[in-house]
Length: 220
Image 1 (spheres, rainbow, N blue to C red):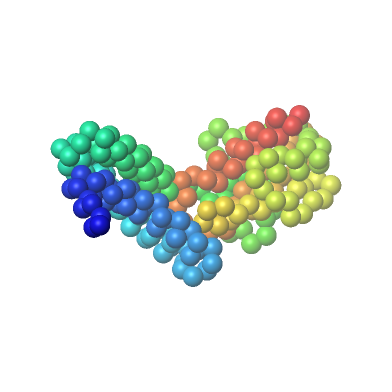
Image 2: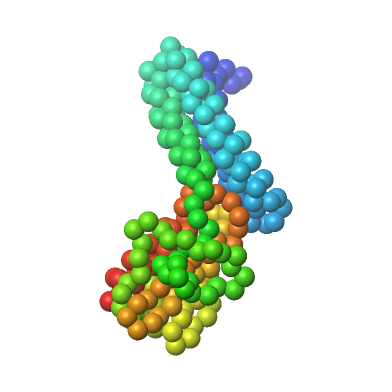
C-alpha cells in the first residue's frame, strides 16, 4: 500500500524544524573545525558562527512563522507544533544576536589591579589597564587561598612560588586562551589577566579579573 502523502502543514512544520536546527548545527561544526585546527578562529567564530549561523537563525524565524500560518490552516495539532518551533527559533535567534553584540565589544586585553607596577606575565605586550569596579584586595592572602581562587576562576595552575600563583585558562568552545597571575605582597594582593589573542571579546578579561578578585575575597 502506498504511503500517505504528507500534508502541506506537515511539510511546513518539518521545514521549520530543519531551518531552526541549521544555525546551531553549523555553530557546533565550526567549534569542531576550530578545535581540530581545520579552520582559523576567524573563519570558525567570526564567519561561520557570528555571521552565517546568525543569518540562518534569523531566516529560521521567518520560515517558522510562515510554517505556523500554513500548519494552522491544516490542523490545530500541526499549528501548535509550528508555534512551538517558532518559539524555539526566536530563542535561538535571540541568543545568536546577543552573542554577536557581546563579542563585538572591544574590551581590554591586558588588565591589572596595579597600574604602577603590574605583576609580570611573560611576553605580555601591555600596557595594562584597570577594569571598572575591580580593585586589589588590601590584604596579604595565603598561597593556598590564591591557588584556590585561581582554580575557582577557571584557571589551571601553571606555576607557583611563595608570593605568586600563575594560571592559564582555555575557553571550552573556541579555545580562547588567557593567562593570569596573582601576586601576594604585605598588605596587598594584585591580579593581572592577559588575553593570548588580538580580537574583540566582549570584555572577557575584565570578567575574569573580577572572578579572581571575588574568589580571593570569598576565600578569606
